[in-house]
Length: 310
Image 1 (cartoon, rainbow, N blue to C red):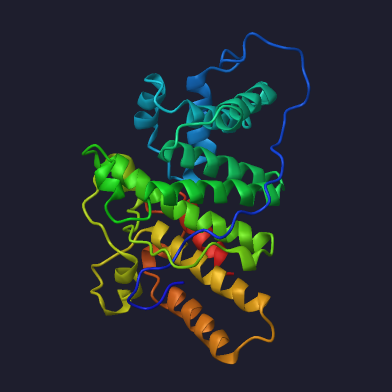
Image 2 (image 1 turned 90 degrees about the vertical axis):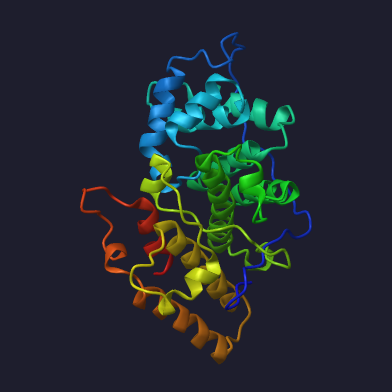
């Protein structure tokens, strides 16, 4: 777990039961399965970035990801992204897109790379939104296992596999931290505190930057969680991203969940969690106390961070 001055621990537990994958309703065979549906790929990508990405901005920004799709570098991720876009288009045949997801992500073994981690994570978030809690938790844990196998929890993974592109490097950092957040949220919702995947694998991944920096590629600072824990002793000019506050909120949620799962509650632990919640609010800068920026942009990442603390 997180301790002051040390990176958090995060690793996988033993294999758990895996519920069957959701299958689309039976329908007539179609020779149009390979993404030649009623809605275009560009249209669905736009819907994904309009309705899904702002709350979970861990895949590449639109221009970068569109380029990857055009080069067919990550078809498994493209299938999930287009399915999520189709969920926001009443004219799209969602079952076709869901069938493509099952085909590219589960029927045919996908490449063991970070894009598959992202695809599993996106699909887990969708499953949770559809009240399929057990399957969502299973999907995110599959993503965690693969991420750890790839070494995404290390401090050098992003730079080693970023091809010199700071946006891709940031994308890999965000992907691992999103796994961290979503696994805790899903475990809390399913009351699966005993199976939270925290043991002895330390996370050395720097914290994500602000969304505006990610989207523009102006990424210069790489703060650590230790920096965040010591924010009370840093100058007022040292700021942290909305993503960082969301990560800490998820950490506190996990601590609270473990406490609730092991009654009677320990008074010292209760006081510690209460102190952490107080610190989270006390050292929240003015810019993070409102969910709408001066430019009128709604910060969905910050909204989720606030929601997790209440």
